[in-house]
Image (cartoon, rainbow, N blue to C red):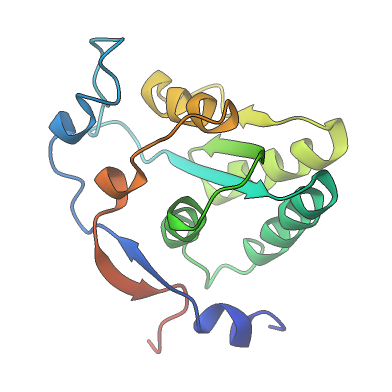
Length: 154
């Protein structure tokens, strides 16, 4: 695909094993509920840009990237989460690739800043809410520090 060469150069961090939720204790101190890591996979795609037009372009770009089934949704979320964040923000919380694409399209069409799958864990929804409100989220606690690529040679 046209974006393969661009994305293949992006290194990011992702964690192979999410481990316990204790890393989120400080982040979620206001709510005793911890992340339910045994729940079905939930993905948080936090996006940000310097202005509204760039954010709209980023939403469009990610919706196209995720159409390619060779692209890992989890790695995509890690790339987006671990990059520098700017003032204009949006997020999608979904449990599947299809949900992520639907959410991105809803962001674009309905001018939303947050789209959440109705079945998504409240703990992950909370991460999306914190992000769009401009709060600091410790994404490294979720994604770890192992360097990987969005596209692999396999």
